[in-house]
Length: 108
Image (cartoon, rainbow, N blue to C red; front, side, top):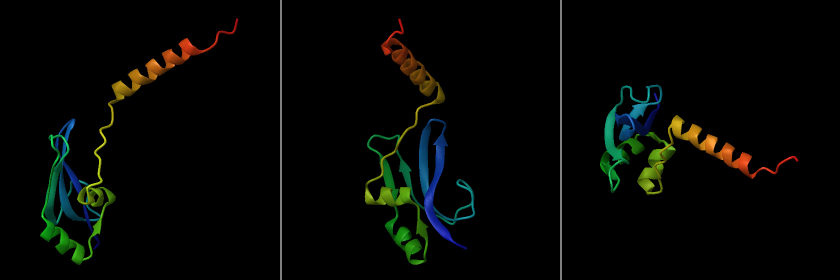
């Protein structure tokens, strides 16, 4: 049984928050986990990050693997990227198409 330290999403739609948990690699993202290590809330200003370093080190000593995003959070290099909604993407694509049409040389 392999254990990973990863983020489990909590919070509501369009307002993410995460628990940093130790879970088996076979469990689902928000499934059963073994221990809660901390929390991360990118929606708050300043960003809220709390980690129980003793629990974290205990799981590392037991051989738990750490996901890249959690490793970056702990190192302080993680940057939360909010992705645009489908509506915004379609509107942007439409606007870019109109700009391309407008800037294209005429064939006369």
